[in-house]
Length: 186
Image (tube, rainbow, N blue to C red; front, side, top):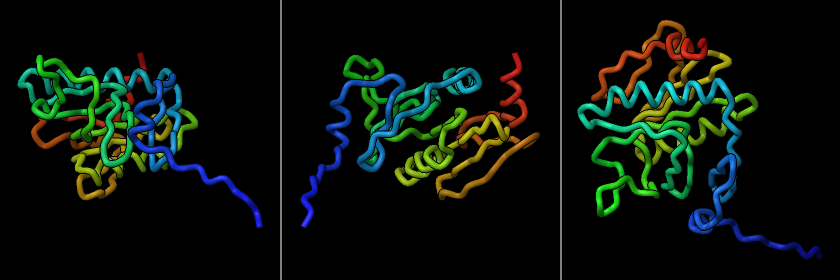
């Protein structure tokens, strides 16, 4: 008979009580997943996406795009590279300021693959978001120059080249895949 130690799985609350790490970690199915440190292409795409999305979404207070925002919902704590929230769903303090903690799912989650990052883990996070009510997920693959889209029914589609990638329905935005990856040429 072998004695074994049974370690209880970490809970979401216990994970959220831990100090933040650099690079940040995500909590997925009782495990801690370390995110890769963003590098040049990743950072460039993230900045440009937030800029373009906020230029389109802020004027009418339609939505706001946040970079590297921790969102804890559905038993997970994820940090999409870009989290987009409709204006009325942005958690706020009593004073009307943006809240520190976002304990809700984003309306649109965007992941950008870094070299060596698991496409499966990134897709797993987007599918979890979709299961919890996120309407749209994008997975940008700079190496392949493709954008994989997850819609609310969890249908997966791959866009490349001159294809226009679908945004949230109330957004008038015609982002062409080739133009998105064109941002990498400075």
